[in-house]
Length: 244
Ligand code: SAH
Image (cartoon, rainbow, N blue to C red; front, side, top):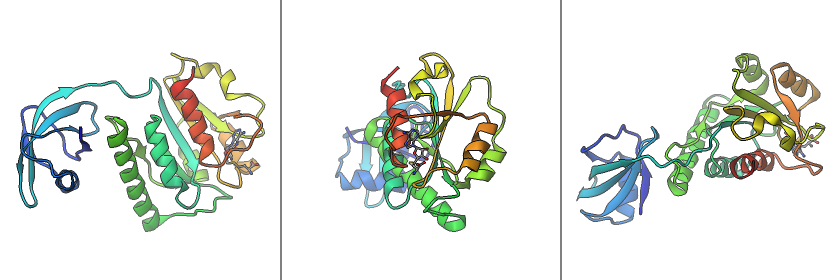
């Protein structure tokens, strides 16, 4: 069944005009009055709905019933990632959404190839949020991954609050001794949220790793092979989503 995100609070028994994005999707699919679709607004529930009118530009739907499927990870996982260049970031956002990450924090590190700031960074962030919404529609998530504003790594670290008691912070470092699987805080039913920091193509500098440790990050290894900047955070997420 067609499934769309709607950037509008949805409520029972309402008949609404779909916002332009969702309306265009419905027109492309040539749905007809009476056809069923599923809508979600990112607040948790998803709605069974039916098309009531197809106009030239306006598509109207009636919301029939809210369901509350549980498709989120038990633990809120945030990936703080020194952005890989090219279209690897699109890939990362899509896969991180499918695998259940709650948020993605794009960072510019000392050795980053992709150095975004200002308006270009804002435009990219909006684009990535769109990628996350499309991946949520496709994968059945009712809450799309949240893409945070692009930040320089040092400034982001400096502004991080002291970790809350139920939060675990990990620094992905090929030089770390402790394997990810040895972290007790990541056992099922342990820490309620986890934040992972990973580096760019050229890796994090020693100074950046030291700064992360000073902000409560514990260094962990993903094994003896070097994973690319887009692979490392996805490996962590796959392990958390499917493993322990
Ligand atoms: N040339 C860099 C590797 C960068 S890989 C170096 O030697 O440090 C990009 C990022 O992925 C790294 O900064 C790290 O955060 C993560 N990563 C890659 N392989 C890893 C591994 N085996 N264990 C832990 N983190 C890894």
